[in-house]
Length: 180
Ligand code: IMP
Image (cartoon, rainbow, N blue to C red; front, top):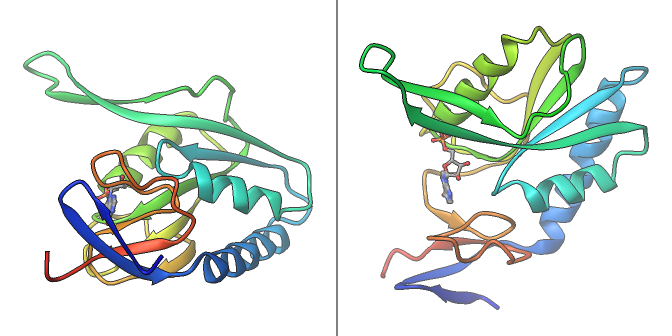
């Protein structure tokens, strides 16, 4: 499939499934080598990173833990403004080596929130592994240590990423066509 339509928008093939799987396997080997002798707790941020997390962890040949979390922002009191919280973090992260797994780091706002919230529980270390990174959109503090693909500032879908909830199941990555 070189072109697809989701809702009102047309997308064209950007990165094939084969290319993705080769890159994800290489990332897994790098993490394996960097964390030799250390136990890792992977924290995968839902919904977008489910497919990346699955392929990444299948390629890591060591004992590890994985947990799936969500970031939620709700209105606090008028003095606190909006409050961020992590949902689904059932296990203690204190003194653990954490790798946060993201589908995409765009502006970096989400990942900054996650790191701030996690740091409050004093983990041994935190790093970020993201399938995609848009450096030209990035305004955050936490530059990801492990990146699958650096991509231009264009909207993409597939391999977990959605356009209004569609497209997450696509095995390849598609980018928005200019002529929609
Ligand atoms: P950030 O907080 O701006 O870094 O954005 C992170 C979130 O925005 C990601 O986890 C995605 O859910 C969403 N996002 C950003 N860019 C794209 C894109 O190109 N396609 C689909 N979702 C995106």
